[in-house]
Every structure is written in structure tokens, then in C-alpha cells.
Image 1 (cartoon, rainbow, N blue to C red):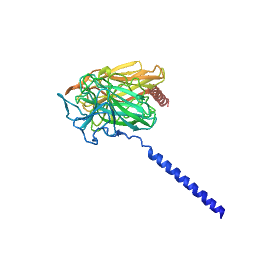
Image 2 (cartoon, rainbow, N blue to C red; image 1 turned 60 degrees about the horizontal axis):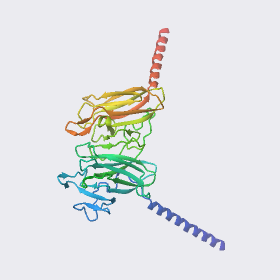
Image 3 (cartoon, rainbow, N blue to C red; image 1 turned 120 degrees about the vertical axis):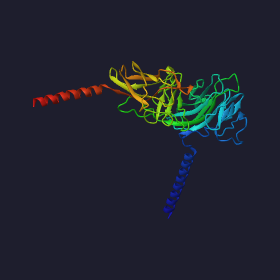
Amino acid sequence: MAMNNNRCKWVSISMFLLSLSVAFLVTVADDKAPPVEDGLVINGDFETPPSNGFPDDGITDGASEIPSWRSNGTVELVNSGQKQGGMILIVPQGRHAVRLGNDAEISQDLTVEKGFVYSVTFSAARTCAQLESINVSVAYVKADAGDMVASRNVDLQTLYSVQGWDPYAWAFEAEEDHVRLVFKNPGMEDDPTCGPIIDDIAIKKLFTPDKPKDNAVINGDFEEGPWMFRNTSLGVLLPTNLDEEISSLPGWTVESNRAVRFVDSDHFSVPGGKRAVELLSGKEGIISQMVETKADKPYTMSFSLGHAGDKCKEPLAIMAFAGDQAQNFHYMAQANSSFEKAGLNFTAKADRTRVAFYSVYYNTRTDDMSSLCGPVIDDVRVWFSGSKTIGAGFAFWFSVLVLLAICLV
């Protein structure tokens, strides 16, 4: 009986400890927030009303009145159609947006997956003719103030569309599971009523596509890229990321001081798939990629060149680079197609070769001389062309041997 009692006692203790362990694990699991999902961040469109409603003047100095966002400095909730002097403030989408005063910022904490690359899409507009920019950055939630992990100033001086605002994308690599996304007005405007307006902030976890066996180009079809809103017909601008390895367009670098446009098939003509790139601003809008090659071997680069279907004024032409070869290609409009295939041959000089594209001309739309546009490229491929030559030669000599055999018989 004593042994049975002791056994029951130990079983009871074991069950009690097991239940405590399970409860602890459940608590830990509940405390860990799931990673942010692709799409709009919480109140990323600023349409959630403050606890006291949307104020008439919208100005808060100090504690934020914007749900789910922290603020520092003069942060203003602006309304669609709101006037400032003789100017109507631009709200990109919906009824509300945020304007940042001098040195003001808003931020939101996000749960992400460590080691992954994320792209942030946001819409921005300037309010004055002065040079304006916005700084977007991420920091660790537990980091000291001002200790940014990644940061980028986006120039808002150039207007790419007549609407007065444009969507932009910027990418970062998550080195921790919790980051703070920050938007800041880094300038000191002469007019304190000026300052950039931001709206529609979204995020997307990016994946670098596997390199195809017959193509040295990564993401040559441009199908992987930043978040795009279905109700936005302006595409997404990709600012320069020359000094960064992280890109909103995996595999590609925007080298120039002007942006290129990431476009979708819902609002533009795309040669293949659902995504492509529209080249803007002539030589000031360059995209490039370093592809793996073998020195002294022959290669072919091919791509699709076309019209975005956005009333862009012709002629449309691009300059294509592959190693030490450069060639311009003019798009010739066809009745049954909005794009054409093009390509060039080159001999690799090293184990990595640069391929690049830019628009030859500065194009604008036929119905709007202030909206920048340009040729579209898609389906970029680079492959070892020597194998095709060998194959052709083998087929030729095989045919000769067959004919000789027939003659001898």
C-alpha cells in the first residue's frame, strides 16, 4: 500500500508539473504576436478616427492623436479638399492623410520575421514648391533613440504624375523580430506650413526567386516586387538603391538619381505575367543586375520591349548593356501587339557581368506633359549561347553523314 501511495504521489506531482509547463508554453505563445501580414499596416490609410473624432484643424503637438501611430513634433491629420491659403492639400487616397512638420515623425512597431527582406510601400506628396523629402527608416524596438538599422531619404521634388502624388517603395532586411517603422520630415522648411504628406502605408515580405537553369538573371520577369494597391493606377516608384544590397525589386539595382516605375497588368500593358518595369527620365533612370557568367564564353541577352499603354508619347527607345556591349533598341508599334522581342550577343570578360537598361528619351504622356513615362521592359534572360552553336554544328554534320550513307547505299 505504501508503495502504491508513493507511486500515486509521484504521478500527481508529474502531472502537476506537466500542466504548469503546458500553461507556460501557451502563455509564451500567446504573448508572441504573429508577423505582420502583407498589405496595409494598422491604420496605414489614416482613416481610423481618433478617440475624439477627426479634429477640424487636425494639429497635435506632442502625444499622437492618430490611432496605432506614435508621433513626435508637429503632425497634422489633413482632410481631402482642405485648403491652405490658395492651395488645396492633396490626399492621395481616401479622405485623410498625415502631414509632417519640420523635423516631425510618426512611427509604428511591427512584428516581422528575422532574416527576411520586407518592402514598404507608401504614397507621398509635397505641399510646396520647395525641395521636400521624406526619410523612411527602421530601428529595433529596444534600440536607443536615433539608432536606425536602415534608412533612406526619398526625394519628392520630381513629380512623376499629374495627380501631384506618387507611390514609392523602400526595402529593409529584418535583423530582429520586432522593428519600429519611422517616417520623418528631415528638412527645415522656410514656410512652417509646408511639409510632406504621406498616406497608404503597406508592407510586403519579399522572396528572392530561384535562378532558372537556363537563365542567369534573377527575377528577370519582375514578378517579385513591392506591394501594389489594386485601386492605384500609378504603379510604384523605385528610388535609387545604388549603395544598398537590399532592393524592393529582388535581384535588381536602381543606379540613377531618378526612379523607375514598377507596373502591373491591371493598369498597364505588360509583355508577360503580371508585372514589369517602366523606364523613366532617360539616363537618370537606370536598372541593372550583376549576373553569373564564365569568362571568354559567348552569351545572349534577350528581353521584351513595349509600350505601357499609358498614352506615352513616342518615340520609345532603350539603351541595353551587357558586359562591354551596348545597343539601343527602338520600339516599333505593331497592330496586334504592344511589345516586341529584342536581344544582343556578348562575350563575358569575368565571372560576373553587368546588364543594364535605361530609356533613351525623356518621354511624357500625350494628354499630360507633366507626367513622366517611358518604354516597358520585361522577361530579361541571359544564357550561354555557345551550346546552341554546338548543337547546330552537330545537327549539320549528322545530316551530312546521313546523306553520305544514303549515297553509298
